[in-house]
Amino acid sequence: MKRFILLIIMILSMIPLLGWKFEHDIYLSNEYLRNSAQNQGEIYLEYYPSIQEVIYKSGNISLDSNLELMTRGEAGIIEKNVESDFELDAYRFWLRSYAEQSEFRIGLQKINFGPARYLRSLQWFDKIDPLDPRQQTEGVWSMLMRYYGLDNSNYWFWAIYNESKLKGMELVETCNETLEMGGRIQISVLGGDLGFSYHNRGVKNQAFNERETELFEESQERRFGFDSSWDIGIGLWQETSISIYDGVDDLPLYAEFYTLGTDYTFDIGNGLHLLAEHQYIRTEDKLMEVAEEERTISLLTADYPIGLYDSIMGLVSYDQEQENIYYYISYNRVYDYHSLYFNLSYKPQGVQDTTSQEKASEFALQILLQLNY
Image (cartoon, rainbow, N blue to C red; front, top):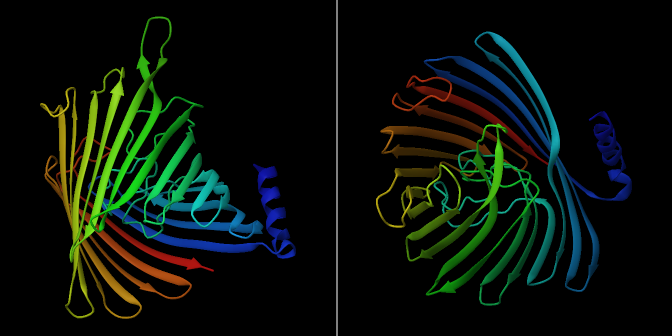
């Protein structure tokens, strides 16, 4: 670790001499959490330095690179005990070749798609929290090719090198050091967009015997996605994801995610924007028959620009199975190079607490300062 830090310091010190583009993203966050089990306060300082460089350019063909690090320090008081931690890791690291209608990128990068904003059925490879202003997520080591047609169509192909980590909404880990492959086609139809996606990966199938406490056998997951969106005065979109697990013990054969969404901006004051999404999740052994497990979530948001720099947003969601309502409100003030957020959320009693078997209420307050330069 010490050698790695020294290498990074040497690279950063050479940036002014090499003429590279150097950007900084800094986040300072103070969070307070209160529930029936415990009260805790934490302070986070996150720093994301990034280096960008155009390596080669000739006509319409360019070659560039990007290196972005994540440095994160945190300190918190949990039940009168002070705890702290520090982390340094690569956040993005890729090499890209692109032309007017095509792009090839390889390295540690983010891959996401789909029109849904909050209840994303096509959240296959990222864990972005839609309520987090930072929109940070771990990348995947992958190769991504994209071609953009003149008719607004686009074609994707990707291959992902997996390190046995859960990505997105995966139910079971991918086999370690294997390649996942998939692709996507998006076309324009009747003034809207239609997307078809496919992904295949080998997954761990866990079995037990007397000699070995843990034995993994390789099985398969085939994942199909379909999405569409239209703007017909109001915005309309849908996302569908169906996973088929072949030979995975203790998992149903099918896992299905369905999302419907709509939004509209009313001519009230500076413009009141309303957005609603509804997601239905089910697992089953036979497609479109009796579900083994079901979950239904409905969500409504409203955001309003108070002025040139200020805006406010409110959200309420309802989980039918847990009979739980979640409330969230955010106020933010944005300048050219820095932003300030006040986020308040409340989860009433009725949801299972991950730290105990008791159902507890939860109150959270976050103050976030974001600097970009």
